[in-house]
Structure formats: C-alpha cells, structure tokens
Image (cartoon, rainbow over all chains, first blue to last red; front, side, top):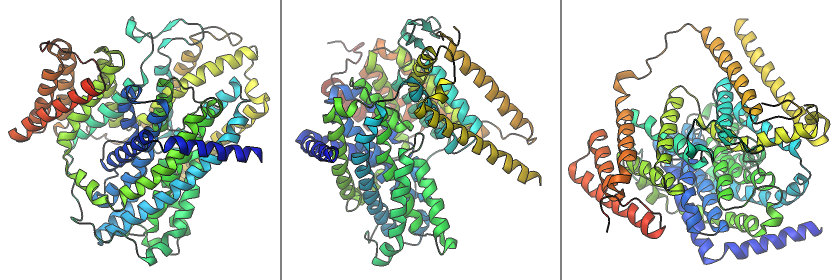
Length: 502
Length: 122
C-alpha cells in the first residue's frame, strides 16, 4: 500500500516538474521535432537524438533534455504514419506495415480517416504505455537492485540475442553486426585493467570511439549516402486531406484493433530487444489473423492501420522501462537516450528512481503531457506537417550532413572526429548495400560496455567457472530462457529446411 | 588474454574474434549453396552520387580548420546542391546563404560551440 502511495506522490512531483514553463516548452519542441522526423523519410528518431546529443549538455538540465529526447522518440511514432499513408514510403521504420493498408485507404479517398485513426490509436496506446511505465518501473527497479554481474551478463546477452533474432533479415548477418558492435566497443582503455586496446597508435582513440560519432556516421551519413543512389521524389496522393474524423463505423471497426495493438506493444516494448518496429509487425499479423475478413487486408482495412500504429506507440513508451529500471536499452533509439543520460552524468540503472527521482518522475509525467500535445499536433494540424514532404531531399541532405559534422566537432573540438564519422558513414553505406542493418551494431556497441565487465567480474567471482551463470536463481532463469529461445530458433530453421526438401 | 580464472583485457575480444570467424564461415557456407548470379553491386553508375557526397565531405574535413566554418560551410552547400543535385542557381545561393547564417547563429551564438574561424578572424 505504501508503495502505491509513494508512486502517486512521485507522479505528483513529476507533474510539478513537467508543468514548469521550460519543461513544457522542451516537451513541445521534442513533440514537434519528433513529428517532423517521423514524417520525413530517411531521418529517424535515433539519428535525430544522436544529432542533438552534443548540444544537449549546453541546452538544459538533465530532466529537460531527456524530456525533449523522449518526446522526439515517441513523437516520431505519430509522424511516421502520415508519410506511410500519404506517400507509401515509411516515414519511420516502425510504420512500415502501415503503408500496406494506409496507402490503399488514401487511394480510395479515405486518407483523412486513416490519419485520424492512427493519431487516436497512437494517443490511447501511448497513454496506456505510460501508465505501465509509471506503475511497473518502481517495483522492477527494487527487484533489480539484487542483480550482480552474472545477472547483468545474462540480461544483456538475452537482450542482444532477442534484438537480432526477432528483427527482420538474416539471423547470421544480425549476429555479425552484434559481434562487430561489441568489438568496436572494446576500442580504447580496458575498463578493468586500464591497458590500451585497438587504438592503432592514434592517441585520440584512447578514450574509445565516441558513441555519438559512431551513431551519426552509421545512421546519419550512411543513410544519406544510400539515399543518394536513388533520386528520392515524393509524390503526395491527395493534395488536400479532408474529413479527418473517422466515422462511427470506423471507430467500431477499429476499437479492438487499438486495444489489442496497445497490449501487444506494451509487452513487446518491455522485452529486452523488443521495441516499436517489431511490435507493429506482430500487431499487423495478429489483426489479419483475428479478422473475419482477412481478404480485406492489403486493400485498405482500417484495422491494418489502427493496430500497428497503436502497437508502436505503446511499445515506444514501455521500452523506457528496461532503460530506467535496469539500465539496459532495448533498441537503438533508446540506446541514444541511454547515452544522453550518461552524458549528463546520470547512470541509468536500478538506483535511478531513488537517486534521481526528479528525472524519472519528471520524464514520466511529461510523457502524459507529450501524448496530449501530439494528439493536437497530429489531428487538427496534420495539413501543416504534410507540407514538409514538399521540401526536397536535395536540400535536406546537405543540411543533415552539416549538422552531423558540427555535432561531432563540438564534442571535443577536433576534426579527427569528423574523419571517424565519415569512415563509419561509408562503412554504414556499404553495410546497407549488403543488407547488414546498423541497428544491432549500435545496440551492441552500447551494451558491450555493460556486457564485458559483467562477464569478467562474474568469472572472477566464480574463480573461472562459467557455471555461475546457471547456478544463481535469477541469472539461471534468464540463461534457461536464453537456451530455450536459441533451441526454438534452431528447431524452426531446421523445420523450414526439412519442409523445403520434402 | 588471461585465464578463465582471471580474464585479462584480450579475453573478451578474443572470444568475439572466434565468434566472428564462425559466423563468417556460416554465412559463406549458406550462400555457397545458392548458385545464382549476383546482381551488380552498383548498377548504372549509382556509385557516382554517393562518391561525390563522400568527396565533398572529405573536402570539408580537410579545409574547415584552415579556411574557417563560414566560408567552408557555404562552399559545401553550393558544391552539394550544384554537383550532386543540379538545382537552379538562385535556389542554391539563397539556401546556402540562409543555412550558413542559420547554422552559425544556432551553434556559435546560441549554443556557444567554438567553431573554427579560419580566414575570417576578427
């Protein structure tokens, strides 16, 4: 009982912080920026937050800057649907499946209801996700205080494997990206012995590769280079979006899709390695399966828009839970917020809620407010944002590249970092050409700094016996889960190849 | 590298290297079974525009400290929009001027990032 009272007191304090003029302003800036990058294809929330990381220190206090970055992250989930529906290009990775039925609805002149149901579904699901964040985080953090190195090792390993195995594309390629990310994370001083690793004689590499430099190169520059290959021209389906409000019939048809999407997103968001992208794919599959008219999917079924768009928002909110309670980011965009906290001198982990209650409750409360702001930004004002799609990529691309250059330069005031970013940009471009996704690499880079010390400390504790990971109850459970998961995947692959031969 | 009992700095990277070798072998093995002709890596000169982009970025990194932020940024924008995108002249000039001034105002004056002054030292 006392705990529940504590949570409400915390939430009240959080609203006190979030309702200050500065924090309201930065929540709004975050929501607007998120909507904008969500709408613009080729610029996602992860890249945008990494662009803002170097300046975040200079802008404001930790609470304020995290409020803004969180706003960018969940705001992009709102904006992404707009481009998917109107242009048939996902504005954002989590809106890929929205293209299928959203664009079909637009072709039939129902762009308005599609946009409307996406925004309303996003709002409902986003709010459900934040409620989960509010009430599940404190008990989870308390539980996680007992975690030692073996538990952290098991948990991060589980997160990394789930992120690659649940993601799209080849599992082998995903695992290769994870290993490369872990290796890149090992550059610089060894955290335990202090000896220098993989610096190739460059003094500037002793501090390790900066996370921002790597992310901007891989996401920012790499994405721009691949987009330069094809000349991006965006064509709007409808010049004017009319009748934004879905009809009563639309609501009746999509209400369960929104509820199901919310809960699918809720649970997939909490999973290590889960997140908005996966949850929207799962939701679409579920909607198609439960529908009485599965043949309508792909031809403009409103449930195919309402479900995934709800799921990605709910997942965006709940993916803050592992970050703020365990200190483990589950996906690339959340990894950026992890980095932002570190830059501000705040260590994300089980002690965050007790040591920095202002940050935790302030950010959580701002997310309730941010969702209301985004509903207003995306329903009546959607026409304004659509105009953004008229800004040609030809103008946007060089400006984004410049932003990246200034951003990395400003961290240490050295051109060396621009070179490093450029090199990673070219690598990121080539990776994309051979279908290697940079997301798992970035996640592994961040998690490597938790994984490696945890592994080595655990082995020190057990005097070299790897059984320590299986003997302790919590890490044993996690490892058991991990083994089951791997076995399941192996069986699935074998099953498939057997089926092909037969 | 150390031992299991006392893992040293090379322990983790060594393990990763082994994993990478195994994964690469798995990928080679998997792809060797398909005997289809791979699609050309850069069909129809699609390498040209990304290459130009990289060249302009290299130019920027080489020059920005000596010549200074304002001039190099302006040249960067003009080069990108002219060489890669072939936009109209008045568009290029107005956007380059506007962006250079805007970036300078945001980063130098508002956020107080020390940008290289270069030739324009006053």
